[in-house]
Length: 97
Image 1 (cartoon, rainbow, N blue to C red):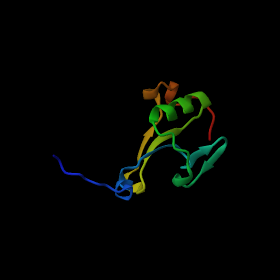
Image 2: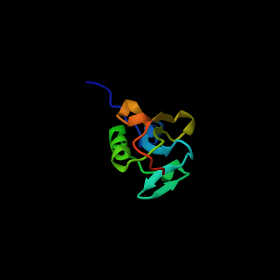
Image 3: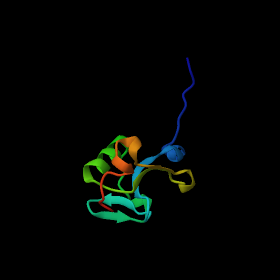
Image 4: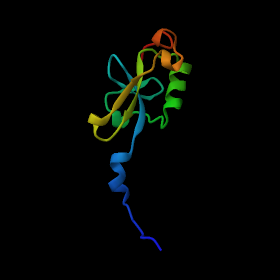
């Protein structure tokens, strides 16, 4: 038979990634209806990029980016939401968070 390997959840912390929305101009993160925060730990986690992009499109937000955020911000990956995601002219509308 094979070996049993046990892994604590604490050892997997570095693997946990959040999918956040950030205003590309101000740097604030989406927290909830009409709420934005400077702290990525307080931001709403969309869990998957498709959900975040759909929200941006439906809410008509402008100049936002999806951020794949990790506990250590040096590994965060921002991706602008632009024409690659079906936004006209690189944005959904003229609403600004």
